[in-house]
Amino acid sequence: MDPLAPLRTLGGRLTPPAEALAQAIAERVIGLVVGALDVNALLAETDLNAVLEQVDVGRVLDRVDVNQVLDQVDLERLLDRVDVNRLLDRVDVNRLLRTVDVTALIGRVDMNQVLQQVDVNEVIGRVDLDAVIDRVDMNAIVQRVDLEALVEQTDLGSVIAKSSSGMASDAVDAVRSRTVGIDESIARLVARLRRRPYTGPPGPPAGLWTGAAS
Amino acid sequence: MTAHAGGVMPVEPPPAARESLQGHYAGFASRFAAFVVDLVVLTGIFVLVLAAINFMASVLTGKSIYFNQGNTWVLVAYVVWAFIYFAHFWGLNGKTAGGALFGLQVVTNDGGDVSGRRAIGRTLAFPLSFLILCLGFLGILLSDQRRALHDAIAGTVVIYSWDARAARLRFLSRPRYSAPRPDRPAGIGPPTDPAR
Image (tube, rainbow over all chains, first blue to last red; front, top):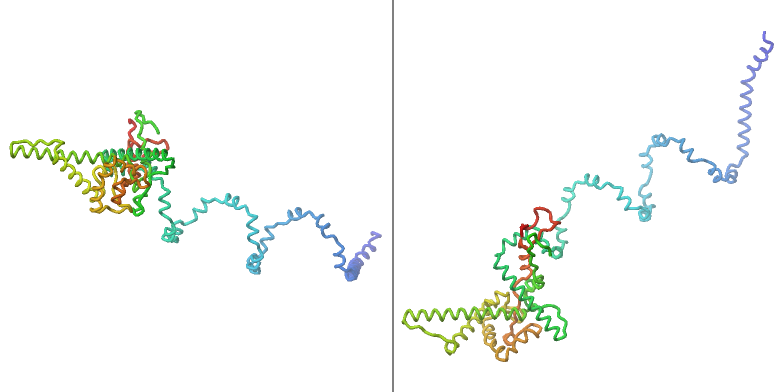
């Protein structure tokens, strides 16, 4: 027979009541200590910044499964509680936009993909073309057209050539052009003799149809 | 200017034709050239008429009529014919044959059509420009409106009535002028003959 067996039996019987007693005493002591502590004063004396500096936030975040956290968040419910208008009122949009590099932003946009999603026909259908045309100065546009290049480089030239009378009109145009050139030469010579600047042929008469005289 | 394959250079339009002078006062050379053409035309018609009269007389009477420049009646007839010629055409549309050829038109000072009465006045005043040693034509060179003496008397001016710009467009539309351009896409533009 083991001589220590009676002692082990006694110890086994005394351990639970002793643990219960120790726990009760500890709770009581903690309660007394907490009651005696001024937590606010303690926090005031604590340098939280120094504490946070010692915390490796990155390492903490690495250990956090953000996706799992977000899965548990009811965003709909959260957003329901957010007054978006009030939030936006507090946002200085202009200041926000100033910090945005619009060029870089546009550079990252795949315009082809965007345009593929646009129903151009529907967009055009919503445009008031009459109003647009009313705002267009057609005369100014026509003035910008290089008619001579147009005639030279397109079939319009051949159309004009076919519509005009050919050799006879060519000859008449040539004769007229030559005599007008001589007119101008004489006028320049006379102006030089009179020591006056020559600014081109005078006219047209005030009452002449200006459209023909342009 | 680009040379064609055949070595023929495309004709460059004169600088004066590069802008429309339609409505501007006509210069001395154009007016003088138009007058010369008018003289040729009216003299030619007059000679033809005299020849016709001579022919008719020879057929009807068997005797020819000999006209010579010293004959007073011939001279008077010529002056009357010239008066009718100019007065008629200036009053009709401001263009004689020579004026039409050179693109000239007689209009009033303010650009209106010339009435018959004004055309007659201009025709009657026309010789005055010659009778004072042609000094009446100096106004074409010196005055702002390029008016001769008979223009000042009749209250008329002479303008270019042809559109130089349209003429230039016609000129450019000619295949012989339109040189092939390396930057022109195939199939666009007037037909060009590479052999030119």
